Length: 288
Ligand code: GUN
Image (spheres, rainbow, N blue to C red):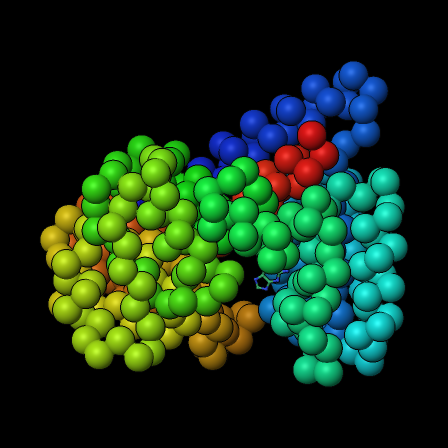
């Protein structure tokens, strides 16, 4: 069994981005600039935005965080989106999700200029992805593709089972892996809460992408020998022994599943760092 080391892969890709930024600034161009809008006080969202800011600093990007109160109205948020769309100094921006319940997330996403939508959530970018056109691919699916590519995983002709059908992970990654490309060229099955016998599917899989959001869902008897397993899960589970009071648990029962795999991502240190790295990739692309 070998590790798909997202931390090491992200560091290597970030070093490449940093050298491109250094070349840019040496020529007198300004560095790429990413803005994140953070509405309210969600602990996980604050952690993610802080991680994105740190990554920007590592690669030499400018980063700004626009912190808005929980009470922000949809109209006020839309005004900020319009302002960022028009700001020539901002190459790309993201609206950290989830938004407070009184705000319609899709209405806000739809207002982002597709050329600045480095999260790849705008319908135009989702549509372009579906068509196999060059676009901003959302961070988690892109991070998974970059990780498979970095380790030279041959996906062509393989059966890939994706657990989960979310708009930000399951469906886009299933789409990418089915495309005529490498990584890609897979036969893809998407499983979800209404799939009658998920084990029967995963046992046939050469590649499993677990993005179902249930801690340790994928057990050893659900995986065939030699499978490649990518764990997208990041559930916070209360843990008195951890200084933070919780630990991060993936969707895979790692200890039992890992010995059966040819390759597997750890949690943490697998898909997580790749997601941040993919956002850096998209921000550089937005500047170019
Ligand atoms: N919340 C969870 N994942 C993401 C992401 O990739 N982008 C944004 N904006 N919010 C998120």
